[in-house]
Image 1 (spheres, rainbow, N blue to C red):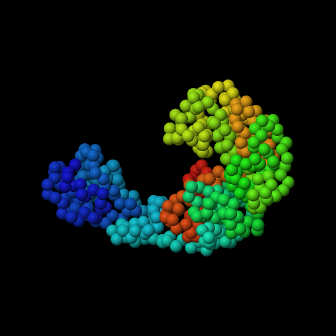
Image 2 (image 1 turned 45 degrees about the vertical axis):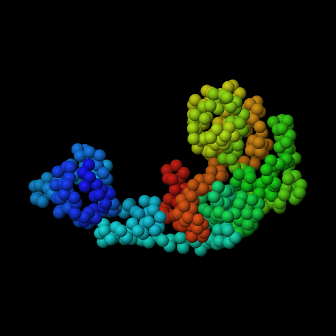
Image 3 (image 1 turned 180 degrees about the vertical axis):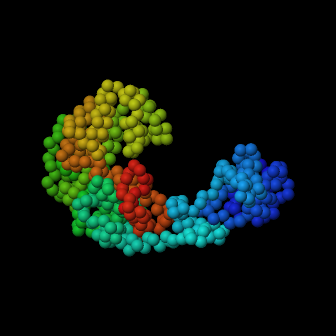
Length: 476
């Protein structure tokens, strides 16, 4: 590579106005560069100009050694010059309706800067229309208010009307959850036809009873009465139950979590008929009707595999295989059985893992897979009751501890919906990843503008419906 030629790489066409150094190690590069400077230095009307990079060799990856721009096609019978598309010189991309700046994933300020530079370099055709999106959030930001560290929707019915969908509370469920950064409330469509619709967001409030009470009051929950779904920690706040490892953690019955001898032998526990503060681990007044609480299939699945892994022998081949299967997970997490949905799916699809288990462990694992595929998803087998009973029996034989999630599955199977996939909280979990890009874009200014910007992105293409497999982002 010619040393004097290197400064010209990485610059767009039209910026090489500096006189080049007269000394080149490659005479052909010098000759062709002179011809390019005389005849090819002009504005190129492309959506993306030719991108220059340093060539690795002069035979197969050097634009000026492969093409002589001075010998251009001037006559009718002249042979046209073929301009290569190689790693050191990526061919320009012409203008087309499908190529938009928004597809580059730039921030608003970066998109405006790119547009101004393209116009300055005469790289945009006169017919190209530039539409500013800097204030697009104003359409929906008026439906949100910011008060006491909580950004919430002040008019849910009006927001639905502005989006163009019917506000029927029976068709939506409210998902409340928190990540390491923020507390969020999202409306999920029953059947997952539409994407997640955020209605509250806060980076200052903690996941506790007072914060959840403030959130529900701001959203006017009593007026809409959505069904609520979340993990069992959130359910405890909604029911006013005391947190932690309590004696009566179940919000449906008085299941004794300390009576381990009766866990796998008794199902008829006394039902909760009232929520009296100071009695049976009730610490506050309940915030929602217990009949409005939905069972979270994803968290139940996580609880099942957690107890299974914790019951494995830590010196067994199966446990060592899990460590090899997830090398990036710490040993403490694997010992605690802390896995997420995609990791569970990977273990289920692995054909080698069951071969590492002994007879009792293999029976418990096969029953777990059967319950996941035949009950906790979109498909519900006719013998789902038998599948769950077999799971409980095999877990007891393996020595798994009965947690609250296993108890819910064992004693309150009638409280589950017919189609668990249509009422799952998994869609709300994916919202954490979707909103993360907006949180980075606004750099700590989490207010009504960010919420309006997110919703505007959802309805950018109104003819699209929710599809979890074919698209990474979903739209109204």
